[in-house]
Image (cartoon, rainbow, N blue to C red; front, side, top):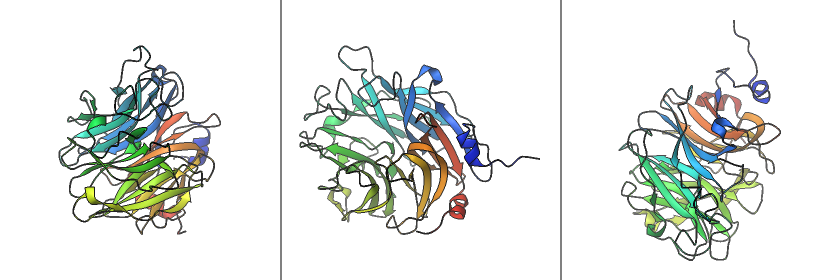
Length: 382
């Protein structure tokens, strides 16, 4: 006979929760694993074969952001997240290079082309002090942060040499101080178009969320206009398709409003001619990255810390009206928690990889999975 122990007690005690009730949870990475100081910035996707692909920052010497000695790591699971293979480094620049400040690369996002099976991972490379604060106008590694991409055609087992696409992106303004992806995951539209969320800092400094898309299988990329060209300033974002010619974007509001910012991108013939709706604000958010995904042929699902000011209480919500309103959601983890990334498993469960810890802050990357019914049974309409 099995003892029924609450997930809250298990989480707070730092114990990996078994499949109690309808939620399975396991720690994928924790501080100190393989001699690494901290793992952060989760991305998660399900491959064409059903493999779970987790990407993240390997922050070797400290928990700090770029510039630093940071690589992009990947782990694979072929059994719906029950177990995970060894960590591999898929983006790694020489940290010993003179004046490179660690030559770090991080903030990854992962995207699967379900038609071909090709997997893309995109990230920001900072050679020297060329990250959020140190980047300036220009396109070279000596001037600004670089957007690099790697790909796999064997279900994530091996990866290509990274390709620097910074100077080739159509619509990328050389006057911008920085341009890179929104961390987490990208999406594939119904017509096969590949789309990442993205962000840039204009010449005057304020950031804006936008889209980065490819209509030729990832060979070339184009950037959209800013989702909110004025205020509030927005940065890290995630996206979901809401119609044949529409995409919803959920954005981190840098004005510290305590809410998420949202807008919808629509087009008639081509995404390059698309326009943005007026923005709106809803769902508490402590100025943090969050995840957004569409359940196949169904509703939208969203994950983030459920607080206007504190990065705590990872919560999963559902929307039946394309993101205009959201239910109260269901608490997944009451502890300190931050970034997250959702995916839909081959068996229909929802998976999420998220940052969490105890009083000291972010200590682990934890994976959880649950059936959609778990979310609906514990959530109420707002």
